[in-house]
Length: 180
Image (cartoon, rainbow, N blue to C red; front, side, top):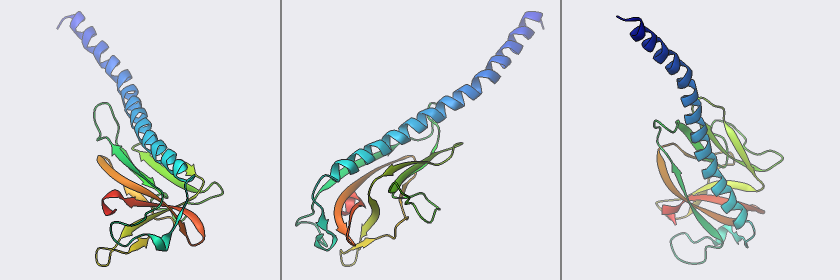
């Protein structure tokens, strides 16, 4: 083997060892950007919704039709792990998975975590609860505070945000859009 070939191989290995951490960092940054952008869209929709008039929770119709009050439908689209995007472990609305309480002095939280990183939160200044419709009677069930709606990548999920008066507080209910 010639000296030039050995030098070329050594140089290639050195370049790879320097560039792999930079590529991984760029993949994590892109995943962080995508997850943060999705939560920013949800946060903006909640903030827009907060300016509307809330309907009493008891006035929500058990089945389709009737007055529903103010609402927004948002699509969460989380990309799969790829060569250019790192793995998004989860995006959560209304709390952090595994934590008892999601509230603090700033309100409720939206959260996400990218593989290799810590959980990041975004505060929203109002109560956020996850609600589902019962398959048997069509009535609504509201999850306890701190039980978030969690989406794992890769996924596309349409969610509806409903502004209601729940237990004397203006609350944003997060509902799978297919249940409306």
